[in-house]
Picture 1 (tube, rainbow, N blue to C red):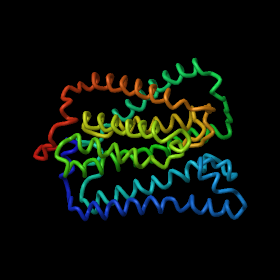
Picture 2 (tube, rainbow, N blue to C red):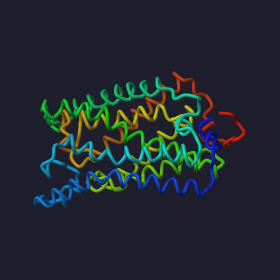
Picture 3 (cartoon, rainbow, N blue to C red):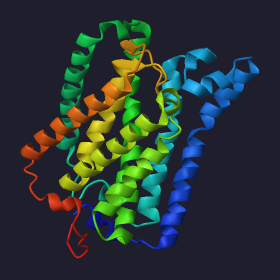
Length: 309
């Protein structure tokens, strides 16, 4: 039902071309405030080259919570642009690229958010038990309390844009020409990995392991999207993932440098991959039982465009 909704509205090639260009343009427009701040900081004598390596706003004398908002503004603008092109260029409802059903299933979003938090917290506690010396407690009420509100309000805009654009809009678009479900599953996952290629983690911890993680995460999210006929579970997971690393446990070299509750002085990427894999398998097992996923052919079968959403 989800991929089949791509047939709704107008789907000429030029519409996709113009829409993608427009969304990318909106992303750049959303970066203008950050650009102004960076130019201002450079004029004041700050070393911008150091900042671009790890996106640490402390290096520019800027409150990291303000910095987080500046980063997210680009994605917020992209999300607005995506909404406009879907509605006015493709003549579709925005929900058609989010869910295969008539309404967005918000209960699934919150369920995935909560379950992923529980599983992530358990994995974190196990890692902390074995590596307590790697954690630095850095609670600062003046920074942490605003961080919680900023993260809860703004980070879902960033994660929602990535999910809706890549695993919604683009995955449906690829499905129009891919015919088999595994094609948009794989292509969207490679796009997701490619868009994270410039993340500071890749330079800090190595391209091999980090790209395996990003592409693997993309495949996992695409699988649950196709099995559940919508993005709701993926939206909840991705929002929690970024909020968790922003608020609870950050690490050196991460894309989000925030005054989190704890800071990891060293990131064991191999342990991270194993932990993520275990959490993902457990999540998949739990939701497949809860929502009674039985037709795993949804991942490989032919896309039937004659179905009604």
